[in-house]
Length: 200
Image (cartoon, rainbow, N blue to C red; front, top):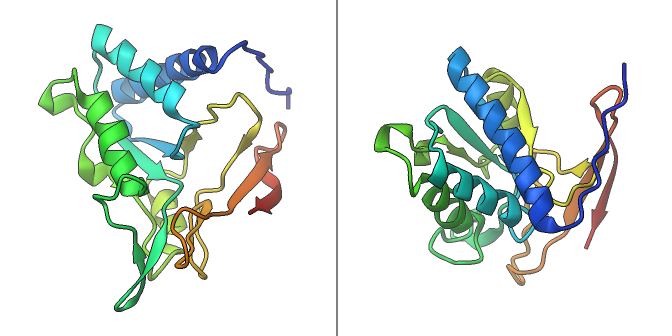
């Protein structure tokens, strides 16, 4: 199998523009073929250059995102009456808030209602059954394009584990802003995840 090409770009904005063009082209291809498109998305500062570039391009040349499903890769969990639960979706530091405000609202701003990315197409793992997430992704086709905004051959595995870890983020009931990230390197030959490392 040939090695994946390596592109070195000078700035975060250049990386964002490159990834945005690639993703929008693949999204358009899926729409033309009548296929659902699953997009794995982290939150925080990392994807912002990609999201900004996608929003700018969609404002100039709108295209349908109605067939896109976001497979969210981060969320904080907090202690609740019935155990661990998602952070409040109206809290600006929560990933549900990020998905709604910084992804849906930005990308949908210049699209017709029928072409907009739907809130029901934003997926998070179930806190009470994390392994269901992998099964749901597989049932939907199992092909997720992961966004790597930093231009490195690293990504985060879209799964969560018990013990307050939501996708690639560890939620701490002591302080919701403290989290550990699990970073996995993907083999360019086999496409499999390997060399996973968790940092505090």
